Structure formats: structure tokens, C-alpha cells
Length: 415
Ligand SMILES: NC(=O)c1ccc[n+]([C@@H]2O[C@H](COP(=O)([O-])OP(=O)(O)OC[C@H]3O[C@@H](n4cnc5c(N)ncnc54)[C@H](OP(=O)(O)O)[C@@H]3O)[C@@H](O)[C@H]2O)c1
Image (cartoon, rainbow, N blue to C red; front, side):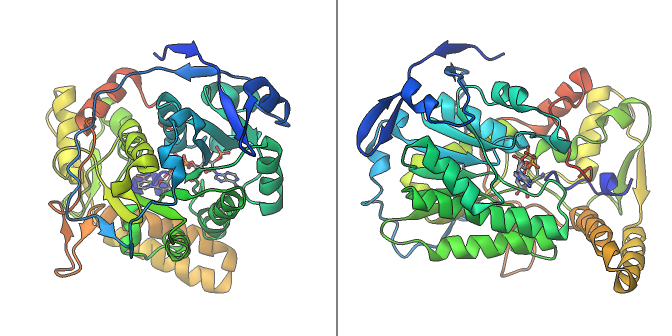
């Protein structure tokens, strides 16, 4: 789900072929043997070789170590070479999931990407397009919402799973779909992974769950809690809670380019975030597979540089366009009014509850910062929010001004 643009609520790789092997009952199977056992497997054997500069990490005090012991003595997959580490990626076709697959493939892991036969926003990608998008990975078409079906698909692969990475998220953020995907389907992937030997689970969550006022946040928190409970000497996890994604902040670039004002709530300083790019976040998530320092931790993470308010984001955009800033300030109370009306109507017509939830999501991202919430002060803290990576929002805006928002599609409810 793409989040954090309340206005939307209301309104070259090069590759080289590389042979792969798969482990099954301690026996090495050739790639062609393995592929034959995939019902609908990709026959792509391409490995991406895109190089990427080392990210700058300023992880510090904000990591939440939830472990009683961070021992990985039983995590033998960490001693294997990457090509022998089997990683099941669910949510592989999402905005972040795609980049996570690419990054894991680039690092040499054996990636099994679970996908739907019609993937992407509103199912726009057929199987062929999905295989192309996930090249370098072995694509397993299955249904994460059905545990038995997912388990059958993993069984058919004929290999053990070492690590599960979940980038699953409800595409629309609605009440029912959030529980179905952010909780149930994610849990299915945990259960299926564990059944076939997974010893580590990396979860893409969200920093906003620290202040859960929305249904998708509650669904994510429930899964996080159950995942943490499973931690023992044989099973570990990493919970990644990023701040805002670039896609959620680029929605006004074209509008402003066309000469219209930048729209923001209140004085434009109601909230702030440290936006992170898809590639930087994917790199951080990939680090979580092997890095022992990221085991059994909740890991809030933002992009490089200072936190930016909507006002500052708008100023950056006008600077890039070489124009005088022109802002339209909308009172936040307008959203409260709309949500109040929808909540009232939902009491009589429960079907309106979903619409009210979308309004609440918009309100949340108009007023709540995507930064660490300091429990002592109750304030959001820029300083306590760790930074990672190199891509800046300014670079992203420059690219969108040049090339448009291609590849930055928002979810089904346009947030
Ligand atoms: N946007 C932000 O600024 C932001 C900030 C912090 C954290 N986050 C969090 O980051 C996470 C991922 O976000 P994203 O933007 O990458 O998500 P996304 O692009 O919406 O991708 C969602 C993934 O889940 C899969 N999925 C959804 N419904 C499914 C279903 N019924 N059956 C099977 N698969 C299903 C999608 O598969 P299909 O392609 O088949 O639909 C896709 O692979 C979310 O948890 C979000 O809360 C977002």
C-alpha cells in the first residue's frame, strides 16, 4: 500500500547467466531438475549485476532490541554461501518487493518469489510480465491468502526454505483487506516458511505502527507480536519499520509542474518524514537476511538527510522547477468534518466504514510524522530516527520532473 499523501485519498540493468543449484534433503539438484518440479516456474536464469554504492548507515539508539538473546548459533544458513541460501519472498511484486527481489538476486541468494498470476496494481501484469519483472528469481505462482495452497506450492519446489522475506501489504488499506493480507496472508507465509525449515523471517512493516489508530496498523502489530513470540534459539526475525516512501510524496510533482499550487494541510508543518527510496530500503531489508546485528530487532529506518515537512518538500520542488513557491493551505479540520460525516453514516450503513477508514488514513498522514515517537516526550524525534542509504527526495523530484512518475504507481485507492 502506498501511503502518506492525504490529497490523493480525497480526490539499465545488465545481466549475466549464472547456473544455480538447489538443496533438497541435503542433495544438490541441478537447476533444470528443480525447474521441472515447479508447476508454473520461471525459466529465467538471469542474474542482475547492477552495482550500487555502499549505503551510509547511522543506525543507533532507536533500534529496539526485543531479544532475550541474539544468538544465531542454530542459524546455520548464515554460514552458507549466498547461492545456497533459499529465500522465499512474498509480496515480491509490490513497490518495495520488486526491489527486494532484485537486491537479493544481486547479492547471489537463491530467491523464490511468490506472485499472483495477475500481479501489480489492479492486476495489470500477466504471468509473462511478472516473470520479466522478477528476472533472476525463481517465480512461484501461488496464493498467499490460502495456507494449504501456499504450502503445496512450496512443497512442489522441492527445496528447504532458509529465510522468508515478507513485503506483503493490502493494496487498498481497507479494513477487511488489511486483516486478510497484513495479518493473515503474512502469517500464512510464516507458517509455510517454518514448515519447510525457515529459520529467519524479515518483515516489512511501517514506522507508523508506533501510534496505531488505523486498522492496517493494528493488523500489522498483531502479526509483529506473534512473530516476536516465536523467537527462540532456532528462529529469529527482523522487523523493518520504514518511514515514508518516495512514491507517497511525488503525487504533486506533475500538478505543480503544470503551474498549480502545492497543496498542504495547516501551515505545512503538521508532520515530517525522512523519505527513503525503494532501492535503499531494499538494500536495508537485504542486510537483515545475514547481519547478526539485525536479528530479533524492531528496526525503524529512514532515508538520508534531515526530516522534511510538507512545506519543505514543496519548497524543494519549486526550487527544482525554478519557480516562486505557491502554496494552497487547507485546514485540517476539513478532513475531520468529512471523517465525522462518514463515521456517522457508517453507523447506519456499515458498508461506508471502509470509506471512513480511507478518510482516516488520509487524516493520519496529514498530521502524524513518520519519525520515531519518543515515549518520554510523546513527540516525534528526527534525531532518534535512523538514516540509511544515499537517495534523496530532491534527486527523486528531479527525476520525476524529467521523466514523470513511471514505476511509482500508487495503490488502488490512490494512496
Ligand atoms: N507508502 C509508504 O510511504 C510506506 C511507508 C512505510 C511503510 N510502508 C509499508 O510498506 C509495505 C509495502 O508497501 P508497498 O508500497 O511495497 O506495497 P504494494 O506496492 O501495495 O505491494 C503489496 C504486495 O502485496 C501483494 N498483495 C496484496 N494483496 C494481495 C493478495 N490479495 N494476494 C496476494 N498478494 C497480495 C501484492 O501483490 P500483487 O502485485 O499481486 O497485487 C504486492 O506484491 C506496506 O506494509 C506499507 O504499510 C509504506
